[in-house]
Image (cartoon, rainbow, N blue to C red):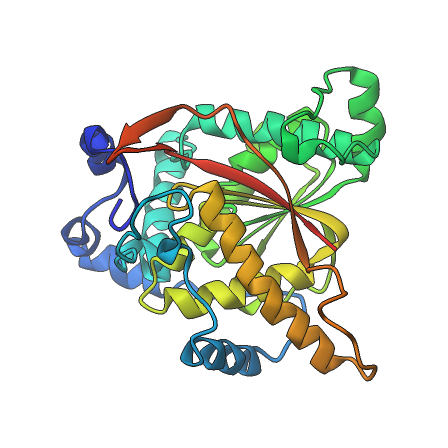
Length: 341
C-alpha cells in the first residue's frame, strides 16, 4: 500500500493488499468504464463547497495546519510526509470496486475487508461498548482506559437502537453489517464510488440487512443534511491523505464531519497511517480553525478561548498488537474516538 507505514516484515502483505499502478491501468477497458461512474444523490446541499476549498487553501498557505504525518509526539524525530499514492484517487477506487462488483456477480465474492476481519471485529465490539457506556453516562474514565464491557442483551437492546450511524467511505458495507449484528439499527453508508455502493447494496440484500441505507456521496462535498450520533471511518482519512492535495482535503474532511456529527455525537476513526497521538494532535489543530469559523458565522462575539473545542478526545483501542521499529513502539492500526461538543 503505497505511502502507508507498515513494519518491514509485512512487505508480502503489503504487495497482496494493493495493486501497482501498472496493474490498475493494464486493462484499458476497465479503466475507461470505471472513470465513467457518475456521482448521484437525492439529497440537496446547503454547503458552499467552493468556499470550503478556498478556506482550506488559506489555512494551508498561512501555515496554520500540519498533516498528521508531520507530528512526532511519540517519536524522537519527525518522519517524512506520506507520499501521494493511487489509493488517494477516486479512479483507483472506482476501478477496484468495479472489479469487485463484477466478481460478486460472477462468483458471489464479497470483496476485501479493509484492514482485515480481525481488526473489524475489534472496532465493532469496542465501538458497541463505547456507545453503551456513553449512553449510560459513563464517560469520565474512558480516557484512562477504565470503561467497562457491556455484554448483556438488555443493555444492547436498550441503548444501541438510539444511535444513528454513518459509515463514511463504506466500500462494500461489511462494517455496517457487523454493527447491525451487534444491535445498531439506524445505519447509513456512503461512498463516492457508485460501484462500491452497488456492491454494498447487493451484499446487504444477500445478507438480509434491510435496515442499512447506502448512498453515493463524497464526504468532501457531502450532500447529506442529516446529523448522526455515530460516525465511523475505517481507512477513509488515510485514503484522503494519499491524494496529491491530501493536506487540503484533510481540512475539508474535518469540516464535513463536524457538520454531520450531532452535538454529543461520536466519531470513531480507524487508521493504518496515523498513530493515536498523531490523530489527537491533528484534531487539536483543526479545533482552532473550526472554533474560529464558528465565531465568524455567529452574530454574537464569542470568546473562543472559553468555548469547548469542537472535537474532544474520548478513548482509543488499546488491544492492538504493537511492534518495535527504529527504537519506538507502535501499533499497526489506531482506532480513536472523539466526541462532538
